[in-house]
Image 1: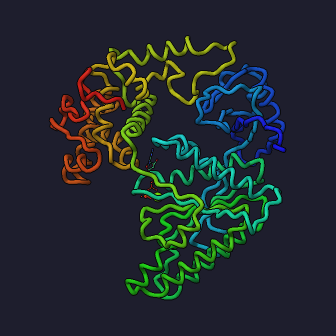
Image 2: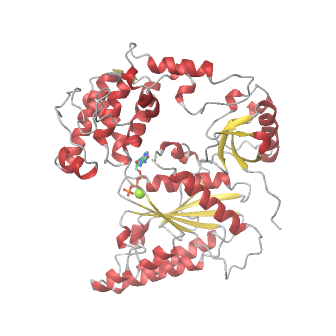
Image 3: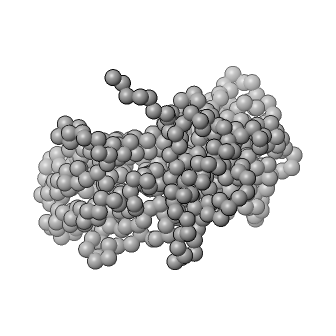
Length: 498
Ligand SMILES: Nc1ncnc2c1ncn2[C@@H]1O[C@H](COP(=O)(O)OP(=O)(O)OP(=O)(O)O)[C@@H](O)[C@H]1O
Ligand SMILES: [Mg+2]
């Protein structure tokens, strides 16, 4: 007989206010969770994933302890359902505070090749939100890892000789595609999502390059010591241990390649030791490995075979490039480094309309993402690409439209490069701050062109290689230069909705 159907789950993350060091917490997490449940049920009927709802709640004693209440996820997130009725869902409320502990070596300094820090950590706050991908890779990874960990720690009576999972995930892709950042952000989110299941979480970051010793025969010994240290950390099963290994190809290099090229036996032995170490910790349900590599072809096939998840991460798509630039430029505007010409009022009108149309305090349905600058009219800034595409006629010669052109121009560059280009443009190609948005965008265009030339020697070659677009009229500082293969001219044949 089928088991009774459970209600789907809404995941709510409650961040408590910072306390001064040494100040004890006066309220227990389970009490806060109970209060939050009551507040939500009393004040809302439906909610949407991604919203921070605290600013929509009536003031009360809860404000003394709570900083943020986020509707973090839903079991069916990604389906066509946008709003979720509170009455139709069970609420999974996790209460957390951010730790300020910096990464440090183990107390006995037995493993200088790793650092440990407590999660969730203040340093990693906001990373999750900063990553922009065309597909919902972070959400998907979080869901899969969380479910696997949850099933492996639950006392479900599964025969572990028959049901096997490897606690290793591999993120691979070109340099600067966000692998390390995503691994850290995932660790942070897992620690929050699982805070009801584990009393604490530790992030162990392994410095793989120091493990490959210059002394012959030493490397495999050091790898063995690393796993001894990890096994020690994992002894306390109430602590979740998330091990982040960057550039895992240094530890799990292909033994086939090493044999073919007559490399020393030490490399082969240390890969053997690494694989054995992973096997040793495979049954440890409180340990998970997040590994990154941009040289997947150099990885040992037996290591790849042990990875439960192998996720490719590409350079950002045009839509993501726009979003990365938009997030940086909006941050400039929020902080008064860049200002917008008053003539460009469309996004303000949009924000004003949304503020009055979509939301009514009594309706108890939240229609906005409170993280989004547009929910606050005073933060009026460059709108999302979707909005620009839907209103192209209003955006003739406007900054959002120009940014859309620049995103096409910059497609193919790494996420790392894209994140730093607006700052470079501001410092190098404008005269002083605050500067006008148009001036910044002209500077950004120059910075993109310079970057393409520096990386590829020729903008045309890069574009043809990566996105089959041809750039014409590419003079420095010439804002009329446009992408002609993906023409953005009004109503033109080549008009392409991104
Ligand atoms: N998709 C993305 N969206 C937003 N920012 C990104 C993206 N990809 C990379 N970045 C930014 O680029 C910077 C570098 O990212 P990260 O170090 O995670 O890349 P990586 O893939 O680990 O690179 P490497 O292979 O060189 O180690 C970070 O500041 C990150 O925020
Ligand atoms: Mg990295």
